[in-house]
Each structure stands twice: as C-alpha cells, then as structure tokens.
Image (tube, rainbow, N blue to C red; front, top):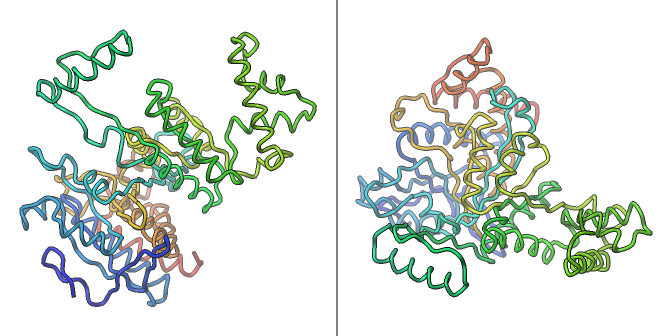
Length: 479
C-alpha cells in the first residue's frame, strides 16, 4: 500500500478515478482530509461524524467513506517543516477529492495563502459557493428567504494570481518604466507614479470560458433558468469587460439551443409582441435614445437586431426563448445592492476572482454569516471542499465553534461525487436542528438579540449530535 507524508493509505478503501470526463466512485472511496488549524480540529471531528452518519443512514451501510489524513498548515509545519508538503498534493491528485478545515496563512513570506496555493497548484479553477437561507436563522435583511444563489468564482486569475512587486524594488521600477513607455506610445494622458507598488490583473479567454461553462452547465443540471455574468467592465474594459464578452461568446457557441441572452430576449420579445415590427422600430425599443445617436452607431444596432432575428428567431421566437436559460450581466457595484433589494431575481452568478470573493461573503451575511456558508474549489476531475471562514484560534479546542460551514461543504462534496442523498439528509437534519433552536453560541447570540425564546446553546460536538439525532426523522420522512 502507498503512503503519503509517512501515513499509509487506508486498506479498507479504494481510489476514486476520473474516466471519460466523469468521476468513478467506489462504494468505499478514500477521501483525504486536512484537519485545519485553530478551530479546525473541533469542526473536523464534528463534520466527520455527521458525514459518516449520513452515509450510513442514506445507503443502509452499503457505502462508507475511508477517511485519510493529509497535512497542511501549522500541523504540517510542526511535523515536516513545510506548510504544504508535496505528499499532500500528491495524495489529493491520486484520490481526486479532499475536504479541509480552515488554514493559517504563514507569516513572514513564502506562501501568501495556503488556500490560494492549493487552488493554483491543483488547477481548481472554479470556486463553487451556494448561498441559501436556512429558516430560523436571524438575518440583517427583511426577506432572507429570497437569498438562494450559487456563485461560481474564477479561482486562478485576476489579482489573486499574485503577480505584483513591492514599491521601491528594482522590479517595480522596471515595470513602471515599461508601462509608462507604453502609455506614452498610446498618447495616454496618464503615467504610473514612481512610488507605486505594481500588480498585474490577468483575465484570460481560457479561464473565463471554463468558469462560465461550469455555471451554465450547473443551471442546466439543476433546472435553473438565469445565469448572470458579474463584472466591472465599464471601467476595466479589457479584463472584466472581456470576461463579460467571452462569457456571452461561450454561451452562444456551446449552449445556443439552450440559452438566450438578455438583449436577445428583448429583440425576440419585441418581435413576438408585434410581428410586423420593422428592424429599425425594434432597434429603437432595444436602445433608448437611438434616434439621437450618430448614424454609424444606429447602423450597428440595426445590424445587431437583424442578425439576431435572422439567426435564432426560428428556434427561439414565438415564446420558445422563455423556456431557455437567460444569460445576462450586471456591473459589480450594482449587483451588491441588488442582492440586498431583489436577491430573488438571481440564481447562478459567474464572477472574476476578486468580485466573487466579495460577493460570496456579502451574500453569506444575509444567511447568518460565514459560519453557515459552504465552499468548494473544483476543477476537471478534482475537488477540494472547505469551510470559508478563518481559523479563530482563540476558540480552538474549546468545543464552542459552529461546524455548519464545513458540514455544508461536505454536502457539496457528496453532490460532487454523486452521493446527493447523503448531502440532502445532512441539510434537512441541520435545518431541523436550527428550527428547534438547538444551536452553537454564534447563532444563540443572534437568536437572543432577536428576542427568540427557548434557545439551547450547544457545543460543537453536541451540535453534531443533534444533527445526527435529527437524521432519524429525516430518514423516516424520506429525503
């Protein structure tokens, strides 16, 4: 039997494989886990027990997970002198799936973030963050039940690519000189200040299209009908603006018979409502103020309308487009206020890296915070599932922290490997436990602030016990 980091692979499990573009999962898959730093020790123990109980009850003992510990973070550094041993990466590659608690970011240089390093080294290009409200959790918004979105955040590019140079270094000086030379050649009326730090924000065709492809495919697989491209393309035209354009391009190229863009829906909808509408009249309805625009712009919009009708009216017209996935886009700052005021208008959000980071946490705030928010980093044939919060070291080993974020991340893991029954059982039992007001200290505090009576504060382990107890009722009522 193989070993990684000196730890033998479990003899009672078999490896997940990836064949023909699909994971092939045995009934006893070996799944590596990283315990995590700080509170990771507490929440991992709770999560493993909940997962084992859900698998046992969902499949009547016919399936089980063979957990295999691998190392990263403080525990790895103490044992091996490395924050992220090669053996850990090798094990995750071998077994395709892993789950992890929160990790400390090393101090004093080297790896900027272990989480980012894992994503980049494993090419886990999509951060998958469903954000759905659990009834009974206090929320800062009036209608938290409207929050039910799935965010696909590009994971390897943007400012997280880590291409930057400190102010005052020779590399920064040379980069500034190079950029300023290009700006002068472009006759741009601007220059980068000499005392600047420099960062590069790459966003590629490949990175964008594979991310948006996952978002649209997710919508198709789950019966959803809206996919929104989030960007700041009105300012960063050739990075985030390109993200929007390439996203639309991918949608049309690969999903033409299943999608309609928002703008196409206007054109087709106008034609459906008034079959005798001319191209020029339709264009004026799509582009308000068109009559005052330069002639060249008018001709561009006329052509857009005509090309759309010629290309897809026969397949999308007469209301057929209403049954397809609507692909639209929203400016990043606009979407932040819209997820507060009309979250129910959105389902799947595809974003560049930084926007997705902010947006995920802003959405999570509406459902009770990061303590309830699951996360996954996935690529082609690989997935690492993680709690999205920090290590909270002052609460470590005190049996008080809420394990729900990691538990719900395990729900995503079960969906990813094709065992959704176990994940659904966990979600139902978790919701029942919260509805009974049996919660950890963070939710107990919020519930008391809301004037909710009859709240029972549980420790981490007892909270897991309550979820497992509620699985019996879920099983009896069927998932």
